[in-house]
Image 1 (cartoon, rainbow, N blue to C red):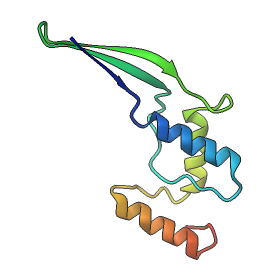
Image 2 (tube, one colour):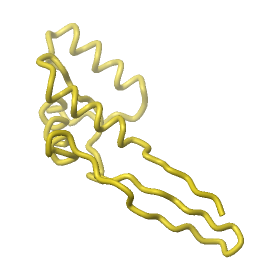
Image 3 (cartoon, rainbow, N blue to C red):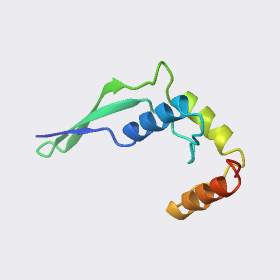
Image 4 (cartoon, one colour):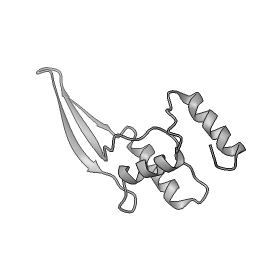
Length: 103
């Protein structure tokens, strides 16, 4: 039996929300989250061919989580740009820099 600890994007969401809440000139760019505010452990059993998924923690930044992060994403991405690849992010970052914080 294999045991994996996976946090995936949770660390990035926590960092993004922390920076947004604590820096004046900070923008959160991207698509809205699925509002999954937990980390999970996965247990794979190859012999019996099943995977057990256990929620192991919930994350927040001073009491706020994915709902607040989505609010910031809505404000900073008011044009509702869909980010499909890294070029979309770079295009909008350059636009923010050139236009004083307005995409």
